[in-house]
Image (tube, rainbow, N blue to C red):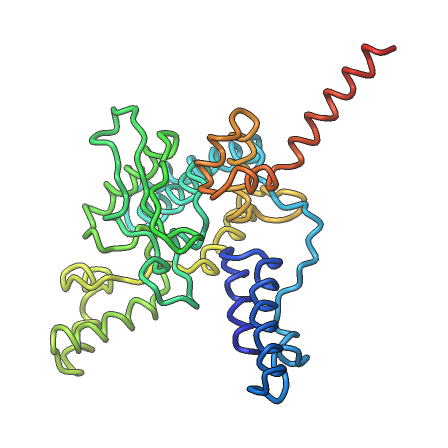
Length: 322
């Protein structure tokens, strides 16, 4: 039960679960254990022990979660645009890295995806949690097209889902793709830049798939840049993790001198901010974009908007009654 509590906490940390949901899941299992105690199957309920429960995430939220407001979002996008264009003009490896960051931020800001749907979740080995792959990205045929694209992601409901990539984000993703010289479809859209991780998968693949001897592997890795080895031997690098990109976003926000209430722009804050913008115009469209199973879930997430609208209506009623 302690390990299960730790697993739930990791999922909360990866933005896969709300803390309240994690506690509900734990309590369901705890209830079953209590039934087993009453039925004589277990001597006691292990879920009630302090050493297990202390690993659970604390649901101390007051409902005020970070939203990327349009002004802050646009300032951040302008900054990351300038940063990427400067690197692209200079060319070199930095251009690819800056274009990757730009594509990620644009995709985050305009698609409504969760971080765990496009990045690698370290605690989950399932295919859908290993990062978005290029084969699951559909882009318009050319930069001149005004059409939107699509992404196929493994959603929170543990199912594969297709979600839109609005044209506001298409150009950044297309430009990044062009700099990669058409990567294989199995490659992650956002591969890790963690060198030990890339060397580890290279060594494993060169030994198991290509059957190279250990000394030949080390000689190859010493003589050839790791990225070229991965490409030439068709070895798929791991995607960057949610925690890794979260840390990188903190660095980017510090460099840009941009924050929301003293905090860096969080990954899930982009989704909430986009949902806030769309919800104010069309409730149903917001539900579809966020891929909520019910409209009530969407309404609950943006109850502050309904409260603001009710306040305006009440104010109008009071003004007309005077």
